[in-house]
Length: 174
View 1 (cartoon, rainbow, N blue to C red):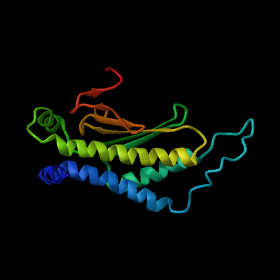
View 2 (view 1 turned 120 degrees about the horizontal axis):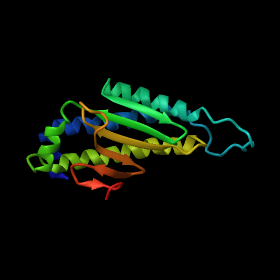
View 3 (view 1 turned 180 degrees about the vertical axis):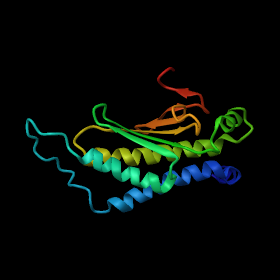
View 4 (view 1 turned 45 degrees about the vertical axis):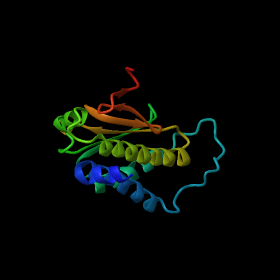
């Protein structure tokens, strides 16, 4: 633990990203205080229209992310596919930074701590969707290249880092 704290002091960029994800988590807990609908499912009608709850939850998360990341994020709710995407980026977490991590020029412990925080925050957002929405929605969070937001460095869903360029994880392409 002491090595992780020492490493995080040396790499404030990763610490800031981790803190921002924690701010989003705490903000959501505070914002949702007492406003969650009952976890007891309502009786289902045969031709019931889709709930507006996923859009409401997504908007709440979007508001929290805006406060934490400013313009360095984007979200997308695709109810047809059942996915809520959260992409974040920082000008400091770029291709050179990732290369330095991969080559051992920067300690990997700080990166791994950020991966753990992203897993925690993504799981928390997932729990909110699971507990409040009838429709299944999967939360997918990514840390992306600041110049090409379609290029992820880390992607997390369902508590698993399915893609982590630093640690060589790519579960889709194995």
